Image 1 (cartoon, helix red, strand yellow):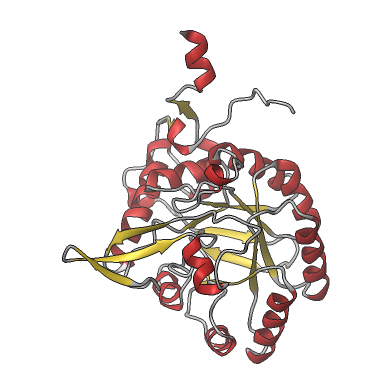
Image 2: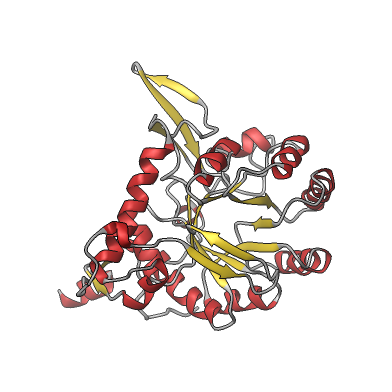
Length: 346
């Protein structure tokens, strides 16, 4: 057993310090990004925000709504083969959609069939597991990259620099970063495992960028300011679940509570998700997610305006005319103290 003494921070622990700026309006800020992926060699242009591959948010309807603003979606993996092949054969213009999958043999078989039925139209894949530190995960990455060398591959989740480096060296273009920060994830409570998300982003981004790789910050954002902090910390993409949940474009069940319309939203490792897709929670594991009821929030367009406006505003406060400049101009100010410091001071 060992204890790391270095300070680790979440979004709530810091603020971005303002700096002198020549910008006169938020409208002057360009929040799009251009990337060349290191392994696939493909190019990307758009606003680097991705709807999470949860069955509530990773929907065809969400993909079409976000594509109008050059945002992306990671589709959930529970669509049928015919639905997925049809979508990828005729994707929404302006969109950048990921096919999501696990690492089992049935997952890979389904992907091959959808790829064939869509005429090879899939270009971006998200390999998604809760624990990106297993040998089985690494073996799958090797197998996938060997068979599909020209596809853009996002994979995770991990939270440390050394594992980020390994994944990029193994063929991953975008490493998905985050264990436990999601609003409906209970891994930190159930398993006691996790890593403060802001520090995870800083450390994984540093590791990835040294190898020309990219990272996607997955989880923990509850406000537009959190996205600004994630980008300021070095995230290339940010993935959102809870902030996109509860909208008309979501695949959630609607229920009525005390005369008010609500939407169900749950983690994909929750009891609710496993009852729906896996016949219940297996006897050897525990649920690591929860279900909440959200107010029906209408079209995602209004929330999207708030998110993009907040990121633009952060850029103006530090004088970043382009989103890619935000990390270079960000200085974080700590606004909380670690418990050991508080107790030590007393």
